Image (cartoon, rainbow, N blue to C red):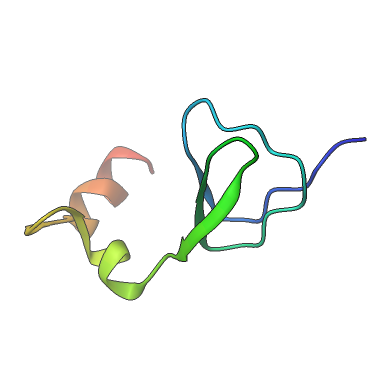
Length: 62
């Protein structure tokens, strides 16, 4: 039986997904469990106080 992983979710390395994972969450572990929802702040910063340059991303992946 396969499990569904929701859109925009992040699954930790080595995690074992044993049930469906909702969209927009961070999930880790064995068995894999939801740790938290992905927030607007997560979408703005990629590491501590370093902002994501949306224009640069759009140029690279167009």
